[in-house]
Image 1 (cartoon, rainbow, N blue to C red):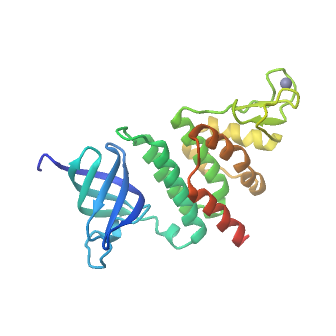
Image 2 (cartoon, protein in one colour):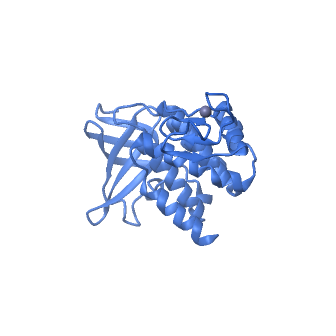
Image 3 (cartoon, rainbow, N blue to C red):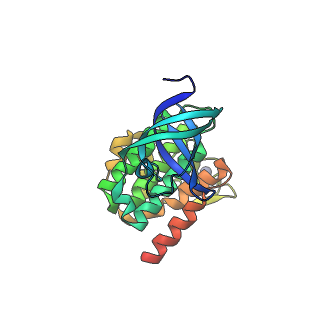
Length: 249
Ligand SMILES: [Zn+2]
């Protein structure tokens, strides 16, 4: 194989239109990390790799290097399309948010084996257990925090020994009403219990666990401010997800 040719497995996490018939894809590959790829003519119905280049497709790619981190598509063969997700607008919105958040957490030039594994496993379980989507979202968010090295602590008590009633976003810990930080949000015992379980469990156990739906939904009030504080912002696809969920409920 030519020196400037790269053969990798990767998931498409973003696809933006370019010119009349092209797309710029963002791929996350376990071994090669985050790559930008120009896919010439991919919007044509006749393009042979078209079905392997949609967002959330996990495919085997042959790429030609243009410069560091930037490639052009030679061919792509689909391995997994997560079709269940593309057939449901709510599930697709969850998937798009997971893909965007993963993309934000992988820096250029970094390997992404753990991040891609997390994303693929999360999408897989989302297809299998769509009714658990709010809990799967929380699991994904906590596990990506771990990969980014930002791990909150869910002790049932404030460091002073009193029972914890607030989750302090900037501190990433539980405190009592007296010692809470300015950005604290109210937290209850069932929320603390499931957050602790997710953080202490393997990805598989956490993704497949079952928990009260209302509490699962409420975890967004803890995970989202914490992620936003550490990442600076959250992807627009999260707003979109909230709108869609609100609309159908
Ligand atoms: Zn205290």
